[in-house]
Amino acid sequence: MQSNSNQTRNSDDINELMETFFKQAKTQFGSAIKSFWFYDGDLCPACSLNEIDTLKIKGKEAMSLNAFIHRESGTLIGYFLCASCAKRIFTDAQKHPYTQTALHTAIEKNLTAAYHDYLKKMKYG
Ligand SMILES: [Zn+2]
Image (cartoon, rainbow, N blue to C red; front, side, top):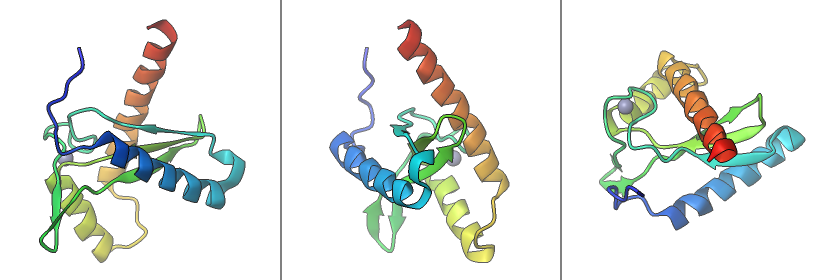
């Protein structure tokens, strides 16, 4: 059964965003990027506690789509965060730009695991 609990996420918009990200990554990294995948789980991949939420930026409701490159497979993985993690990353980035934080390490670990699960399901149904 398909879960359809999160009405704020519009899959057409997400696909469009992912394609834009994918094109940008292709331009930057060339053939190292082969495909893209979107993490559509309900839980935030950073804290694994909160549900993914929208984040208010300057009074405007916005989903903060992020992406990282799973180098092993050349996959660009897109994801959303819960509001508190998104805020934390935003604040950290202003204090220490271009720094990989512990939160990023958790995100990449969780998303890699989720992606492997997804591949397994694709293979074995
Ligand atoms: Zn979170």
